[in-house]
Image (cartoon, rainbow, N blue to C red; front, side, top):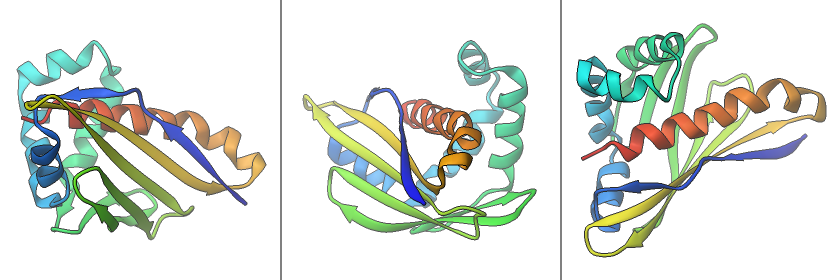
Length: 156
């Protein structure tokens, strides 16, 4: 098995690198995503970028998430999956690893400064998969990286 990586596009955050790192390195702060997905104005904005069925699926999963400082727990059809912070490199990178997933998943959130009041964000999803499984998981994992970057870029 080898590590396959799927990178999002670079997104701009309306937060300085330090502010973005402070929000994203404490996963309790991500509970606002649940509120954002319930906001009709936000759903209208995202609907042009995400198919309606995927948006409903995302909202279903987000409603079931629980948040801690170092971990977020997601209920899935395959059982409980945890994404736990395994490394912090203040103020530029937060690394996660999965627990309870059928394949080993990794997630990196990279932050770069862009002036005093904004920053750039890139999300990378990594998966330990063999050559045959890579074809099956490539599209969903690329969508996950892009969707997560889009969602995080909307944080205020």
